Image 1 (cartoon, one colour):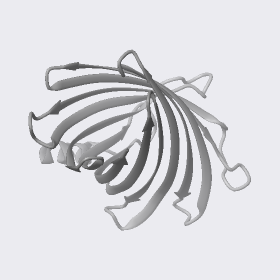
Image 2: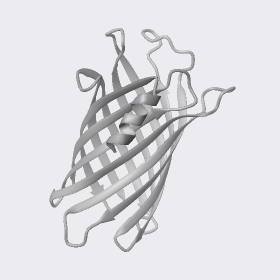
Image 3: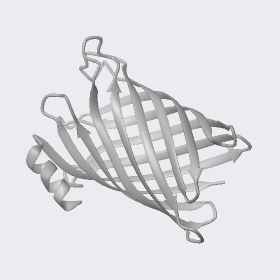
Image 4: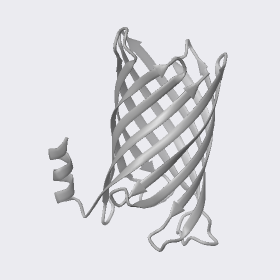
Length: 215
């Protein structure tokens, strides 16, 4: 892992490290689930506040919980290089499907994501910006143990640019979930965000921790 990070640092035009801290509460009612959460992101080697996010989601599961349809809204507070704070809004629609095979679970999620920018404070060419995100995840749960390992890969397909609809970011995550007790889970993970097919691509590796309460 360290060798891969070093190789990225040598190859990248912009390489950074950061930290993610998040929390989420989820309420399940039959086939429905309602969640509210937040996340703080630090960059420049965990010395600078980069972004804060508050998110709310409503999900419906069917076919013995193999399929999940979700609608979500995110409020994002972004800190720019010019030390200004911008407010952004995000709406997303997701469709996921998963299947368990013994202790393994494989799942796929397609998400359409629309970002609305504050045009009174930010100078952006396209508003809103629409992406399709495709994520494939594999997890393994240990029998009789409160531990689950997981890894995922995801790419961001840019849809808002009529002449340049490309994949401009790739994300990889590897981590572990630890169930403290019923309804309480801690997650520790390493995430890599890599820009591709753009000028001056950025590569950032995050160390993350999150807490989830589920009832």
